[in-house]
View: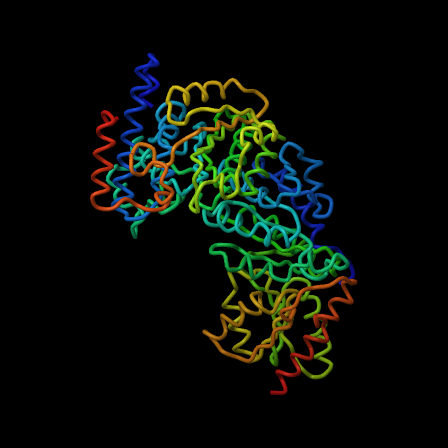
Length: 311
Length: 285
């Protein structure tokens, strides 16, 4: 876990590789090519790159139209605008007709940092998760992001892949085999399950080490595909440990925490603590300061785990 | 399709006028049976849609996915009845399906659904978006090197949507001369007159200023529609917007220029009266 790379860096790299493999891949951007790294694709395949300017809604609908002519579209922009501003285009023109548009915006969550609340989406997983047929993927690191972006080309229908701005530790390497819909157990434990997604996977792993020193054996599962949820893996872990901590850089309303709670309350009810943003907007600051402020550190996960194991 | 074989213009016009009456008759019947729907804006667009489907566009109901076909996008998706009538009359599905409009298990949804209805190019209904998808289609067809053209019908109330103008700028930027927009300008929206709610005038100047070639016509004169579509084919390097001045509810006297018939179906005697009026206008094609 020494190398640090932002998941957004995977976007441009994966797109260039996809561009060589698929002649029908088209990339659309909304004036953020450098930030999202789609500029890499633009340089390699200028004829298949379309910058829509600052018009995210139009970008999504144009992508839908392109998809009807057998193109596989990937869209850029920031998560706030791709899922928020253009929500209805994603819902009505892309998802309802089940078109092959892969929505991979960057700068999700509070780790956007200094730009502040207007640019920090903590609702995007919720927004995308409620759309019927949408695949929702939140990669934990650069390598998983790259594999997921490439895998999306073969997924029929729309896919949302949540990418971040900040450099985060790598957990996997190039040999990692990403399978959409599969949650991966990274640490085995009997006392508590830590289900984490995105950048919180690293915090979950760190927490499991802290907990181990205190005699608590935590199971850490990377739930990178939030929809469709790997119900089997999650239920099996809940059955084993009987206690679940869910960690995500997202509102505690509507994200992975909600998805897990929805599943377990029906299939195997156990106590759950959601580590996430507690129904608040973001604010300006350094990513590390913000994670601490909003209670998204390994210590916050450990605290939740201790609380559950003390029950 | 049959209209292609007609070489004499006057015969062609008469053929299309009869077809338009057929579509109007079908619209009234299907909306009447459904007891809901949007007859006003379907009737105002009938002559335009007829001319597109039965003369202008290259399409084949027996091979609906033919890659080189021209595309029609009904951006004002609430006028679904006129599209369904044209598709059924073209042979995309049996005529009797029309009488299932808006019913459970019908493939004819309240607004067009590309996954349910053969011949529907993209699902529409949320205003402004169909137009933008049409721009994407035109771009995709050009990327493939196809000479197919994309036709999209927008409403005047719909023109209040911001995405229309986002897409307008994009289409002009990319010089999409394979794209023809048609504005069904009947000056009525649900809440009243467009000019009294949020006026879109001067609309021709707006499209011009956005980099489009604008052609203004009477949207009920088949000859003018034919000429405008011909002129559109000669335009190079920019998309084309045909501003078609129309009458909401056109063809049925008591529905013409009546705002309430935007989203209200005729009932009982009204249906019979409307169908009789259309029949009196001339033979149905």
